Image 1 (cartoon, rainbow, N blue to C red):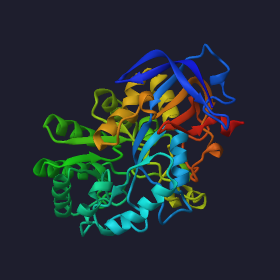
Image 2: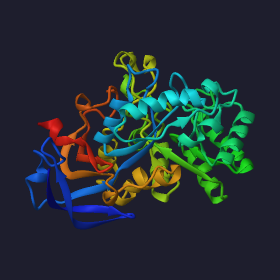
Image 3: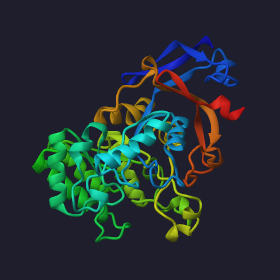
Length: 402
């Protein structure tokens, strides 16, 4: 191993500063081996704290033909992430200590970055009987029945009371199944209900994958009222809308893409701080499950490996959002809300990017077992040269490209 110094824009406490930093270069392929990092002494690189995604699906245990902890966390590292929170729609569902331990064993064995599971709110995510939240609390980032939601208000109220007592967040998948998914009321009616329950119980509430303008108005007002609430949205809701949708599995997700007016409202909410963080809802499926056209394909797209690139290209390069705000939305804010730990160059938990690199989203190069994304083929700026976690290189573009 040898050490080398390079100029880089380093993100600290919300701002960038040009610094001379030291990179480790390993003989078996450190972040600089064979890449422009070692070839251009005058280049400016960008060092971001490891991104954190509070809403992913790693599919293991139970559905490892779609994704595994190993492939999912390596895909995350490819995208500059060093912390993820997988949702509970697994087999077995992490609704008890014994079931959570099955997932934790997979994580301990194969994860290359931090993985903080979400425990289920209800047994088998059935929406009826509360899980053993107390037994899982020490080892989960929060509780969520993502993919199903909790239709019974009394069950959600009791879940919030128990989560509050445990100091944990309820991450709500808001979907009223009495409305079709294409109707925004299917989302905002449960957002409205859960806000009222959070106000009543004093629980910490996080709204998953916000997609509608009405939901944002409700969340904005809840924040003004002092309710302990945060929310997330995904890159696809910020950059795409239903006028762009094609007839293919790459465009099938839940909630679905909304109208251009909803997308405009999401951008405004991103700018005014109503949206606290961006999460990918990385949801891999097999090629066969996504090859049945829009109507027949399963819900879910992948996003960990291209999220920063599409957001940087679609928001920062277009002057919609400053770069430091994007980094805060992808790292600082989710880490703070879900207590995921600190990240940054000084902590040995960061990623190195060449933002002047023009490329395109190429799903054939993805590490994830999932390949379905509407961003496939999109021209983007930025390349992750390497991701460092725990002071060790867990992703190295040079190894992959050479």
